[in-house]
Image (cartoon, rainbow, N blue to C red; front, top):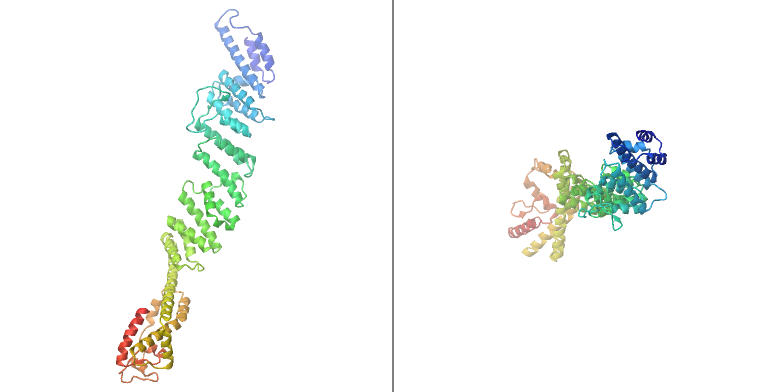
Length: 512
């Protein structure tokens, strides 16, 4: 018996299984002859040999021949015992593909090998190895069969132990381990695919859909598959593996904008793509802010101020601080005519900009405020002047009287005359005022100009009253300031007319 055992275990050939069985049949059975400690030990070794031969037979049955010595040497090693992995993978690669019944037979044989020889493994490991091989077999029917071997949701019940129940295997792989197996298989398929239409992408999706309650890890993989499709719609040609390995996925959104320049108008779709790609991780506010900044920049390139302002308003409403730059760009865009909105944008930019940018933004904001001041003054002149001219028919009559000559002593005529003359001056100086303000680039010009206002050297104020055809030598008549004398035909009035004129000029000054 000892010699027979030594011969069998010494042989390293994998085609001697039938001879090994022949030798086994020649050995005496237990109970034959004297029973000693040595014979008992030898009979135990023969029983073990029989179990090892059965495992070798099962391996040969499934096309994975191994020497008897290999099975004996690996029966106590959990790593080497995972030849079951090679066995199941070998079965999955067979052409033509094996049937479902063949897979079920393989599972039963694996459990037999585990119980007889590879006791270092537990039955759960056999189910996991078997299920993993089904998932990685590149066949949809095998993937669905793997789904029958797993807990596919957290609330699924684990049925009593057993291999089959009503023709179907019981679920034996735990929910957590099922998620790990599905993720590993789907990532393998995803990484090996060339595009969205690759058959491997369908296999990856099929694996993920086995887990019915969609935990975050499974949903992230499904979203990544969907993101690849969205990228292709925007004209971005990239391998799925490159999408997975991209360290900064906001660059993929930027690539979409580069490939489809007008896609900045599709903000909802781009924001959805950013969510699928998990831009900025699990921070939705940061993700939305980064995408909207890119959209504003692209809208400004196309001078689409309406779209740019829409996104800037949202950025300001959420208080996204990194948007100060694009807000300042829109606020300084001369083509954008909404000065009030531009002022708001500059105020936001000044609030969130770094200290090094404050000086430049303050200068731009000051210039913008000067422009707003001009616009308000100009609007006030045009609006109120036009309203008075159109509202009162006396204005045209007053202008005609001014062209004819000096008004009469009637107080109503004097009031009409002074009002019409004042409005005529304001109307004539509007264009000149606009040109002056536009030519001034310094927002503080008016402060500097005050330093030049001083009395004329070497002249007396009274000398100005000697100019003109009508002089007020005795200062008995009231008159206007010499600055306005050139535009008023009769700058001097009597005392009574002066009192009426003063009230008139007070009203005009309030109007202005």
